Length: 157
Image 1 (cartoon, rainbow, N blue to C red):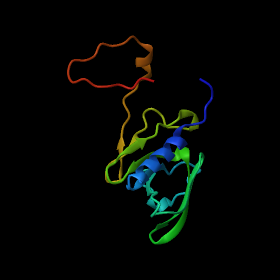
Image 2 (image 1 turned 30 degrees about the horizontal axis):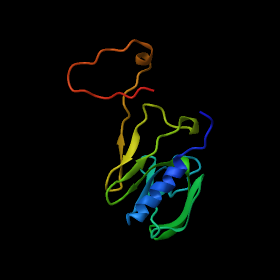
Image 3 (image 1 turned 90 degrees about the vertical axis):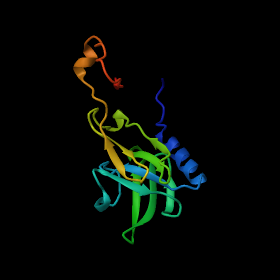
């Protein structure tokens, strides 16, 4: 496959429009540790921040193929926010949790397989869920028959 531009900014715009068109409140989960993220650090929790990006919550909203930028109030103080699209981990509707979690692209400095991935819950808070166990030795050896008991899924890269 030829080198294509990332699809995440396009999906981000589509989900934003879909959520707003359905009269719901779009929230994004941002990787606040991304060096290009300009977010209020005093509201960062576990390296992430959840932001309301509804038209009623922010001013001068711009979403292009590289950045999401806007002005919003935090604790009554106006702040300028600028987030690279690759730092946005998820977008969802606050009211029902409908939305998507974006895959981390390794060439953009993504996390290791053992790092936890954050998934927003229906209340707008992010909860940490560990990724499936991966073991380099398993990838090199022959397949092991499944253990008896409850079935489970394993991510293989």
